[in-house]
Length: 232
Image 1 (cartoon, helix red, strand yellow):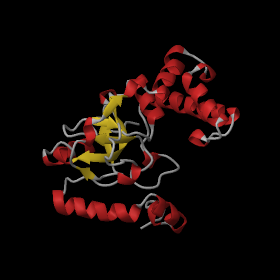
Image 2 (cartoon, rainbow, N blue to C red):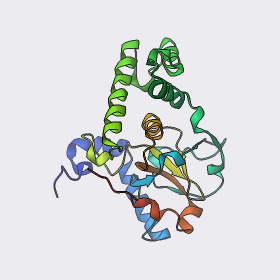
Image 3 (cartoon, rainbow, N blue to C red):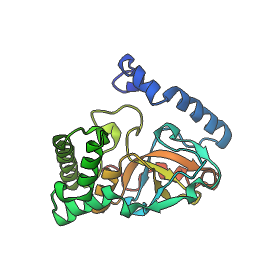
């Protein structure tokens, strides 16, 4: 078993394993399989969705579960999936559309103003501490956009140099009670916006939480299978 094929086992990644709560996720995977069978969700696994099907963001309900990457693969009952906000109204989505559909400079987008305001208040949004940091970050995003447009698909995490575990670090998507995708409150919003702008037919995403009803109705397992393959 080569460390290159299983980076979570490499000693240099043990701290990263703990930060990503991999040991806890392994226990969750075993529990899911024992309770829901072989088709139960696996933490951090890739599923495949139509990006244009993501129309809403799951919003944390007061007193409800906080669902982030650490809860990847968790099967959750209740009404957590009913608290939603419109995805297209997010400032990052609006700014991406301004940039890539209208040709607006990043400095002219509401996102840039928002990030600069946070920096002025002493925050480090998206690890940015200066105007130059923001411009460098979004220069990199421009490259992602151009590469994705040229390729015609979004790469999976396993195809990228920072591959760690399954689809960990990918666009984070929850699955509601009807098997529909909901954007998580954080995790890959720019890449999802790009996939929608380019109207990609399918993208790989990291599973977030899954509503128990979707598992019991057999609506989750089909999402594991790509409908179009990875192409070349």
